[in-house]
Image (cartoon, rainbow over all chains, first blue to last red; front, side, top):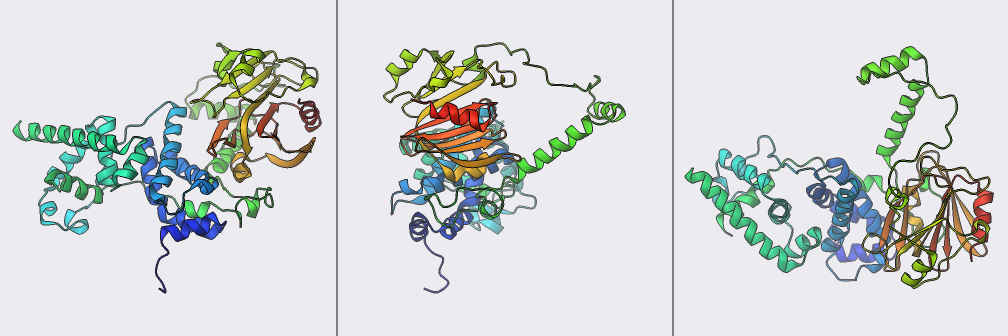
Length: 187
Length: 266
């Protein structure tokens, strides 16, 4: 089909055959996801940039180990996230990630569900404040699943934990967040 | 989807992430993967352009040039930095500086101290010894998870004739060995400004002479995973693929000295 974006498996197959242009397209396709995942882990844009860049280089070098037909996103995310964690370990500091809402953001623009649109600006700010205040494990799993919209498998790869742990960790994180919100509403 | 989860998804769409850098535009790959056709890096054949490091290096050079200038400039710089100390020009390098406290292995991240016999018991591969240097003064072993699969052995030579001590380490030479293979894809990343790479051959083995001060080293371990390690001495370095073992010889030694050490490995 003319003009149809090439699917991931075709791109990876070409990259595995040594076509540099195919791998450059993979980087283009996934650089935002890789960078944001690394940013979530390092809390630093500069570290995230280096981690994502090094991650892509390592993935390129390890392409032979990529199983044909396997989903590429978890594979790439695992490599980039490992790189990000290594950087956090080597610098022995972890910056607290504090996510902010984009200026002028209106939910109706991005996700026009009536339920979402009804969330008042003040409530959104408060929700984000509570997410930012969660413990690291809770914050990472919520950021992965809802802010980066990773699947369970991708979240597991990004966080370096089994998929089953993602589910239980997410359930606990949501319960804690819900409790905080209810407490704030009551107070 | 429950209400809270819906709210979180909506919130995610409106987050102010830092701008994504153009990584695709910055990573230049060789036309084909693998093979030894493109081993030279730099300029158009570079796989990796580290713009930030280049800019940082330029900034450091400018700052150093300013510091080396006249006393009024040095005082002015001290004032800008709110550092109320006198910056003095050192006419020649001190030899060697006092060593910082702590065991050598810890300071250089070499792992646990052991003996040659102890290391040989713990790794399943033959440790190559450069006979031209005699017995190492200290031996360190780094095992997983901090070290690569099958471990990494570092031989420390504190002083040897005609080889200066490196910086504040009190060490003249380090010979580091691990099972794996050199990954030429990463040479672009290893080579900073003023660092050059040259292919060499030692007793039939492929080698790479890096002159300058490389800070990082990449290789592929036996599992096929790429590892990056900090160069401990940041000095001239000879890297060898020695029959499945990657040998790294670091020190303030000349290429001829390094090749002589490498040729005596056995």
